[in-house]
Image (cartoon, rainbow, N blue to C red; front, side, top):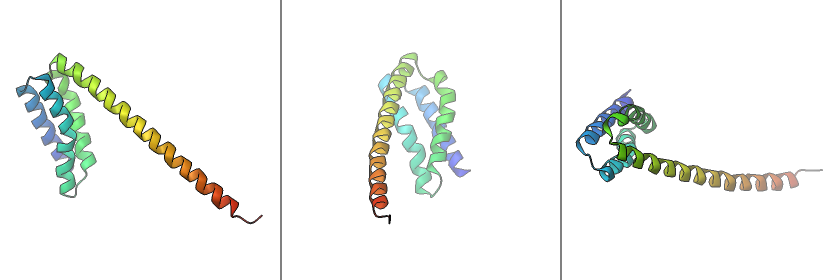
Length: 115
């Protein structure tokens, strides 16, 4: 429950910052910092950082169309699409590398079985 409260506080501060700061680049920097600002305090106190981050993201997704300028929304949408693509590519490569090692280990253990 405290993790959710941390996420709500971070989201409220971010919405206030978006309303106050109208520069596109500054709003992009705030957008990148929000997940860290939600995760790190919760993690530091032994709480669920993931729950805090998800809460902040859900609340912000409700208010960002209202508080962000159209240029900022367009810039951030493109930025986050690229970031998500890169993360998906990285995860795909890591799973592929791990799968190769698992198959090799299975082949070695199968070769050691008595016939």
